[in-house]
Length: 140
Image (tube, rainbow, N blue to C red; front, top):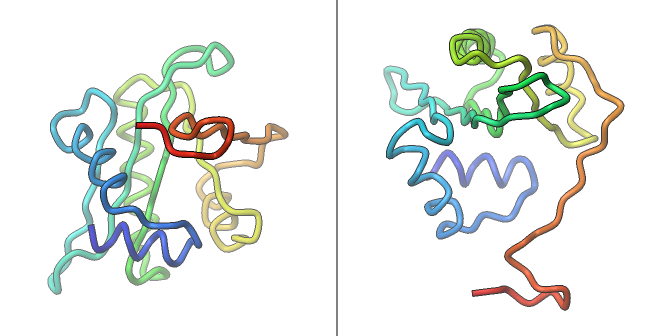
């Protein structure tokens, strides 16, 4: 949970412990929806990644969303090893594509992913928060 909070702070996202916990619980229970990968070093937890399973006509079937990847100390080569293993796992699951999104300002992340074969799509991600009503209040 500490790593998730650090990731949100660095990436400029609000951190809601209850929301993160409820999203992580099914992923940690089994691999129905995806997997959480933990990077553990000699000094403790060094990072994590979350991949989720999807399906898309455009992809030709199964695809994977690399939802989050965070390393406490980037630039050590650990991220490359982790990403290579995530790509191998996606192939094992029969995925035709892996998708991810980065912040527009995060050019370092896009360079990293480009070095691993990812390319920028013409598609634009859009978002509708279904937990909020049209007036902006939170739904129960």
